[in-house]
Length: 330
Image (cartoon, rainbow, N blue to C red; front, side, top):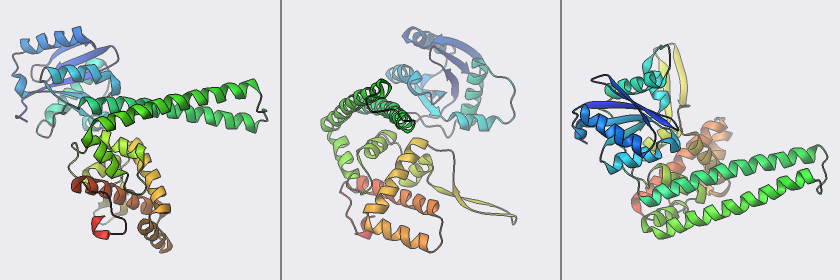
């Protein structure tokens, strides 16, 4: 990427986008739609900015930025997405808040970090569709779990199986199961249509403890293993990488993981580790030996999570399935 000289901070919401150009301190508010994006292009041209030296900095906002990102890629305007928490921590003590102020603060953060910013690369159509289907599936699964918990509560208070209240919940659960199955079928079709995605999906599942859901999630998060160069960086992203916690002679804390993490991936890896401990002989022996020696269970599970992460990156790098009990392959 060419050296960035011009930073525009973008604060996105469902209906509007607030833009702040750091060097000239100019501001623009646009609609979060195609007409608004075209207005932004005219405004950028008015600033007499070389688009190859410009990058737009925005927070992660999920689907709010979907159309905006497509437009920027189509017009070859660089952009990057940063954590809202990282911006907040960089500002120190602040007072006041508005959309304009937020855009200004995002621009200031981007200018301060401009030498470290990396532009977002466009996703393939298959990955974009996969991400949308997976996110929809996750949402339906959460709603289904909520209904299942409600059914348990109704049964606990003594409702009979033929009670209309209970039956309505169970009908909804069945409908959710049907819709989830349809989404999973579409996800499978995407993997079948793309040889690279399909092979990586298969290789990941050759590791005990890694199922379809985790394999799909990691392919999405890593953009089919192009976003992160190694397992350690992805472990930092997931919140499983341990960091030292010491200061001088007074603080001698144990290494610990950071709470700044992708909580969804961390949960999936936790479930994977607990499954692997049951069915993978090597990891089970490691877990039992370490806990029997008095080591904390949670830190041991976290080590197992990282072992699984390293195995996933290893099989993708080699493009061969995981070989059980062959330690050099782990």
